[in-house]
Length: 410
Image (tube, rainbow, N blue to C red; front, side, top):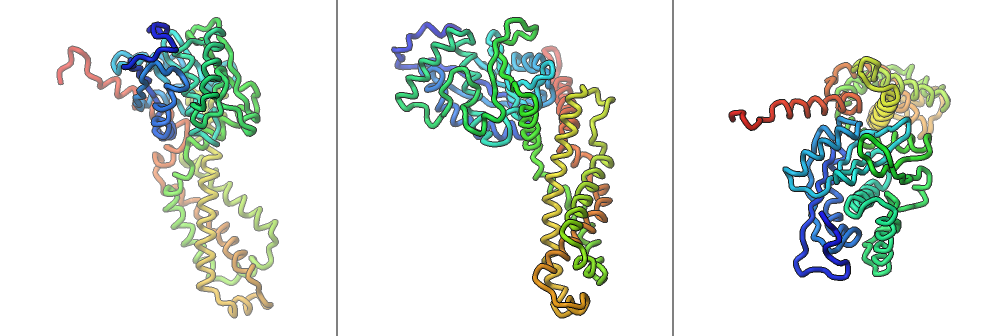
């Protein structure tokens, strides 16, 4: 396609159409893609090229979320282009992309007209804004080219649009930045580098130069992509077992005496032990730890394992808070102030009730940890990266296996 056939200062009455294919992975990538599509349709003409009528076509593909290798993703995207009549393709995966131990945020192949973006590498905050700006930049480079001259020419276009107030709220004023610069974004900056020699035919790569801060941002992004709050329904049987155990323990006045005797430090230590025990039991019982035989590289394995731990930790903390609230209501209804005073042998304050509920929740969590075995393996494993990656890859392979060929009969 030749972009120079239409002068910039002359917009035809009927503009030719350009279609951008958005190819997100299932899950958060697809959800975020749906939120930015309408904005992209409005912004592409202003930010990229107003000589064309832009269209955005989304399609979810499980292989985009099953491969961390750009080579396979590029090949998959190229299969879509002629069938869907796409001019450019932006693949959005929720997996990390690593090159020689460096965290890659996005890669661009101008020749193929395909770009790949790792959504978790953008972090967890302002994700909609970052995704929108990143996609605009990737399409910008695919359309105009990635040479220094092309970037300089596009920077002049961006400056003109900013002066004419056509940026529509975008703070991205550089034709070389993947996302706009905010104060919080300086913690883990993203830099652009040209790739002169690469077997994957990559022209431009956006990377996180600071290893620790980049991997911290990636980890937070992966935990958000796992959507840990979706685990809460998973704990319904565990919650039932724990509440029944704790409610039975409240019958005995020894737990009342312990709640009065324990200091805050001991209660906090007991809470941490209970939460840690439940997280560890879920990992062990449901085989969530990525091991060597999983054929995952050591670095990928460590990232997946950390993501699993923090995902479960957030879910268990929310479960624990719900348990405390349930026991606080139960204690308030069943334990009268007179009975509480008689059991303790001294006057009580309002703090005695939350302390008793706090202790009961910790004891119930330890007792209810075994209830984690009641949950389905698939239900728990779907919230972890290692398992979800393999499941998506298997799903994609089965779809390709059963796809009818030219000579197949329906």
